[in-house]
Amino acid sequence: MVAAVQSLEEARAWAAAARVPDPEVPCVTVEDLGILRWLRMENGVAVAGVTPTYSGCPAVLAIEMAIEAALRDAGFDARIERVMSPPWTTDWITAAGREKLRAYGIAPPEQTSGSKMALFGETTVPCPRCASTATEKLSEFGSTACKAQYRCTACAEPFDYFKCI
Image (cartoon, rainbow, N blue to C red; front, top):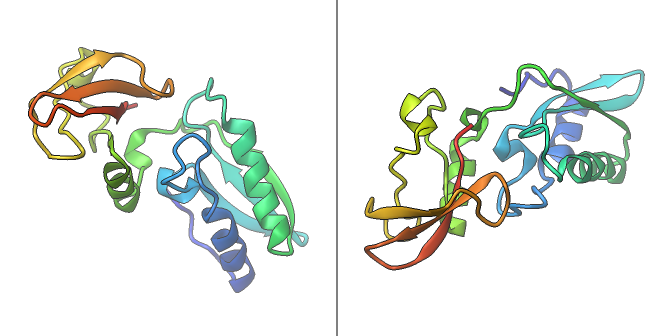
């Protein structure tokens, strides 16, 4: 979902913005989540397009401010444009981002958000620690609204599941 970077200056600005960690899930960056959509230079200003993970995400402003600060620290005048369409989906999380979530102890969302079974809570969520599919949902909400709380009945460890959107 990342637009092609056109110039070395844009590539340098992209690299600065892409390193910003998610404030709620700091093991992944805005690039890993796919919410940094594009970056372009406009009259000497680095303009970054950012899509919130969902409209009620409390971290949206913090993320936008962190990206703007990262661009300014890299020597750019900066501006953020919030991009609402198309809406973000967990399918935009990169493979590297999914692996970082798993290594951090958070079960990543299924690759395909179009699964109708997920709407009925019939998703099989493998444990991020032991990979067992003998898991059970404890709560629709985990440490943040975008996660659910699960427990592995094989290794007995609780874990968050990044909900599929």
